[in-house]
Amino acid sequence: MDGLDLREVNLAGARLRDGSFFRTDLSGGDLSETQSSRAKFVNARLLDVDLNGAKLYEADLTKADLTGASLIGVDLRRARLFRANLRNANLTDARLKGADLVRADLSGAIWTDGERVCAEGSIGSCN
Image (cartoon, rainbow, N blue to C red):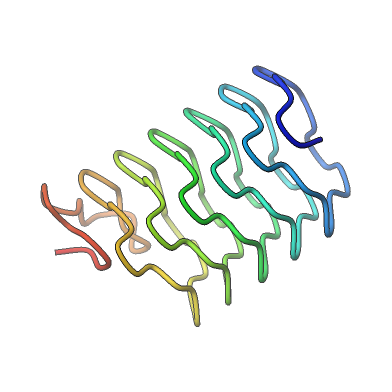
């Protein structure tokens, strides 16, 4: 699936485990409830994507653009989000234990408690 234009695709509930979506555009798509453990979304465009309830355990989202994405209840344990863009994303009830958020932009994101909004310039952690 590397490099494909899959904007607004509906993959809700799909099994994408170990899949590769390098530089794939999935913007506006529905990936809710997907089983995407260890999938690779490196440099992928995931603007305004619905990932609610998805299992992204150990997924690689290095430099992925998740601007405005809905990540409610998503499992991101041990996921790699190095330099990912999570601006204005909704991380309510997301599981982030062991996730690599180094240099990730969390500006304007709704944090895991569902109440706190990360301040502008929140890089690597929600301030």
